[in-house]
Figure: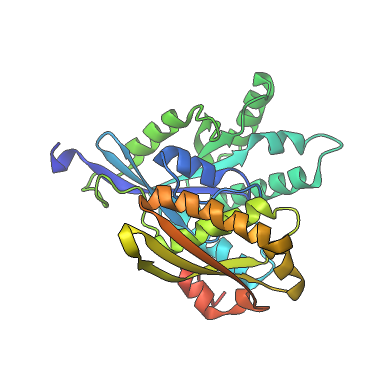
Length: 314
């Protein structure tokens, strides 16, 4: 393969919280590079997944969900999302088709109405910034074709999109077609990463993200978005193993026993689930040690933002 034949560039996946961005990135890459949970606003900073498609290398920027910011952390996440889109060679606006259609019903759930409102705000933002985008309607399973086509026609008529793809990030339907389109959109040039690399998230930061995912998977009803995970030690251990020490920060004293669980069983589950997945991803045995601490202002410390690549001064 000659250097002249290669392509490489960045594709930003933009969307409202819980539209399925991380699931799509993981599906395109073929391995886990971004955490996934049923909670919205899980991704707090852009995560790059590296996709090889023929002679093209697509560096996927999984941006935080775009929503109406209220706190400093919210503002930093939204700024990171738009910055990722503005710097990309291609932009995909991912919309939850089920939520979009459900929001049109008289008895629509507040969550569906909010998702549709956030998607509409992103559409207007794309138009205002003159950012040509590819529309990807996600979660298309179990939607009648006539309703899906009507939705696609209405959104495409806004003038914000160059084309429309209908996909299911969960089962992979339509994803290969989208990948081929992104590959064609990449500019000519040498690859930006080695052929066998799937992401550029530092291992200790990835480890913290995996553990945070398990916290939300286990405590999605009991624990609001008031937790952070920091990897405090990441070192080689005996017999090729890896020793990882992490601290789970919560904002209130009342949240610490929730994370610990009765007799420490919840924390044990989180640790075992994270350790098992990390051992697969890092391809070596992992010894994981977790501590839970209360720090009321963790989301207002400059060190946290610097550590995850977000702008503190927003």
